[in-house]
Length: 188
Image 1: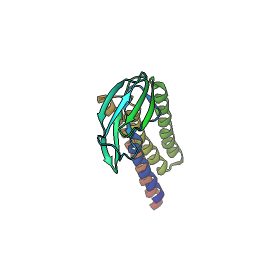
Image 2: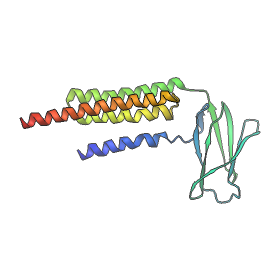
Image 3: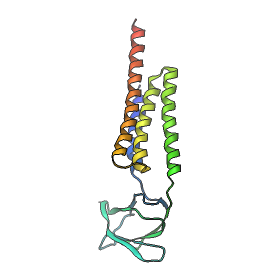
Image 4: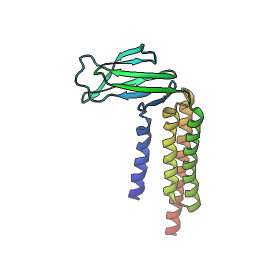
């Protein structure tokens, strides 16, 4: 039981860890990600510049201090090649590519199938741990779908989160009901 609780806690922490989207070498078009600097100690003004493929500066702003001489800022651009230049001369090349909505939808669909698979398997073998694991898995997919993949916005985002939370709550209720029935059958 302690292992199951530890697993559930781990899975509940998963969405918050996955929702922090750090910029890689390739970024989807118009998708926000975070640039985190290495330790900066030689700058007098902690700013960054973004240059396009022709070398023109298209953005120059101050960075946000995180702590321990580390800074961050949000990167979101149209399709193209960009060079991020930090105040200490450090650079990073970023390629912004076209939207990959179909791939993102496929990933979310596969994650949903896995979560529902755990729940169905839990029903077949009458095991509450699999029900709860399936429910937590679905709780983890909701933030992935709405924040990391940026598939929905506004009111629809809240509806989709509510949908997955509702499915997860039903699975937890089924698991608790099954556990209660098992306890009653063992006593009687």
